[in-house]
Image 1 (spheres, helix red, strand yellow):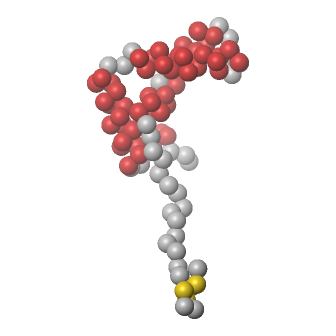
Image 2 (cartoon, rainbow, N blue to C red):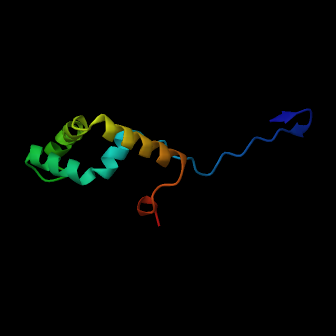
Image 3 (cartoon, helix red, strand yellow):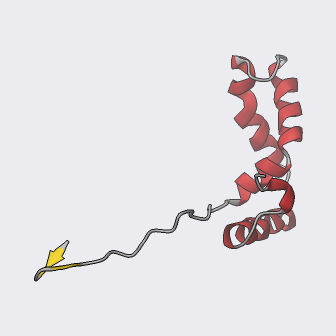
Amino acid sequence: MFLQGRAKRRAKAPAFERRKWSYIEVFTFINSSRINDLAVKLSKDKPGSRRYLGVYKKALSRLEKKLTEEDRRKYRETAKKWSEGKLPRNMQQE
């Protein structure tokens, strides 16, 4: 924008924005193999099939409902830590 003959400079946007993690995303990431196994068991089909994809959310919900409040608190703390700082080394892209 121009203002009285001078260019008004805008602040540069950061190149990368940190991701905001929710506790359910952290839970899903950490327990992906358990969720996958339960979805395969419920769908009685291979991963990636329509039936599998149809019950994946149900499998996630079943496992999430079994969490205690203490477990939920730990996942929330992890989500906050991942959102504010660096991810663990094994999750960072090479």
